Length: 113
Image (cartoon, rainbow, N blue to C red; front, top):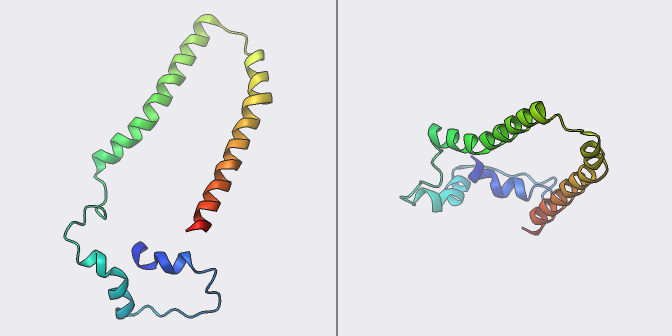
C-alpha cells in the first residue's frame, strides 16, 4: 500500500481538488517494477531477532551509562550545582537549536524531492 500511494501522497498538496481514481490499471502501472522483481527481500519485513538486536543495540548502552552514573554518584557524592548550571545554560539551548535545525533540514529535503 505504501508503494502504491507514495507518489499520490507526495504530490497531494499540488493536486488540491483533483480526483484520483485508483483502479486496476493504476495499480498495475505503479507496481509493475515490483511485481516483476523476483528479489523482494527489500520489501520483506525484518525478523523478531533483528528487531530485538536493533533495540538492544540502542537501549543497552543507555542503561549501562545510567548505571555507571548511579554507582558513581552513590560512591563519590559529587556536587551537581555546576553540572546543572552548565546543562541549563549551554547544553539545553544547544539541544533545542540542534533539533530545530534538523527539522528545517528534513523539511527542505522533502520539498527538494
